[in-house]
Length: 254
Image 1 (cartoon, rainbow, N blue to C red):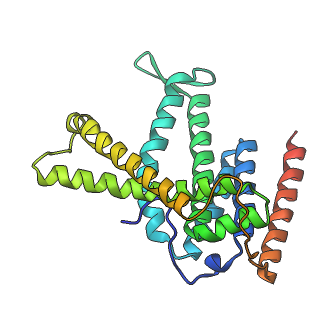
Image 2: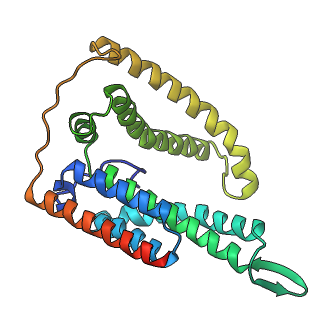
C-alpha cells in the first residue's frame, strides 16, 4: 500500500511537467474550489486533478485514498444534515430526517475538499521533494526556512503512516484484535504513544543532521532553476483561459 502524499516515480507526461506548472494548477483548483458553490462545477474541478493522476499512472493510489476519504466525506454530509435545518424538509413518521439545504451543503463541502485534496496529491505525488523546494525558492522566492519545513513535513507524513502501520502489526502479532469500534478506541492510546515518541526522536535526529551539515536559519543556498518547456507554457495558458472563462461565467450568474 502506497502512503499518502509520497512521491511516486513514473515516466509520464505529468511527471515531466515543470513543478511550477503543477503548483499553479493546484493553486487555481484550490481558489476556484473556495469561491465555487455549484456542485456541477465542483465535480468538474474534482475531475481535473483525478484525470491528471490517471495520466500519471496513479490509479491505484486514487483508489486507496478514496477508501479513506469516503469515511471523512460521509461524516461531513451527516454533520451538515444534522445541523442545517433550513430549506425543504424530508419527514418520515412525523420526524424531520434532513433538509434539502443541509444535504446540498454537505455535498458541496465534500466535493470542495476532495478537489483540493486531489489537486495537492497530484502536485506532491508527481514531483520530487527536492524539485518542489527548488521551484518554491528559485522561482517563487519562498523563504528557504519555510520551504525546508514544507519538505520535511511532506517526508514525515508517509513516515508516520508507515510507523503507525508497523505498530498496529506489532499489536496484532501480540494477539490484540483491533477490529470493532470498541477495540479501535482502546488501540488509540497504545498507538499514539509510541508514534509520538518515535516522531520526537526522529525530529531530534533530523535537527542534529541539519546542524552537522552547516545549515542554519537564513542560510543562502543556490538552486538551478528547472526550465519551462513549451508544454508548460501551453498548460499555463490553458489554465489562464479556463480561469478567465470561469470568471465570466460566474459574473453572468450574479
